[in-house]
Image 1 (cartoon, one colour):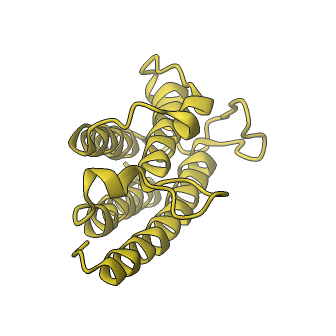
Image 2 (cartoon, one colour; image 1 turned 30 degrees about the vertical axis):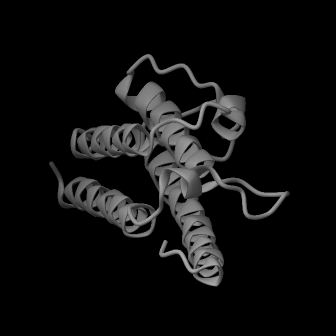
Length: 163
């Protein structure tokens, strides 16, 4: 593996692991109820954001590069009414991160610049680009999770409950 291919694989793997660690920092303290609570009528719950991040990674990198066969139901990521178990949601996210890390590490020198295309992602024209765009997308939603988790903690403190 050339130095640049190795650097790409290592840096992306490390970054996605950081995303996962940051998710746990903010989601682990939440209760099952808080995971699915929408503190604002116009936004998503932390649980829905996790479903969306998982679906995004499984589709764009899993189906698109790793050829996992994943079939995405994007609408369900935002509209799931089942209030899935927090542990199960986090496990699915962890599996997606593991798959992304393994897929990044499997890319050889010629793989990063291979042509890439996917529905709803016309800007990503190479494998490198989709790894980069998914990393940015994931951390955008980590930022939302941080904000929501802080708001949930503030609301819980007002009610005299620890978050």
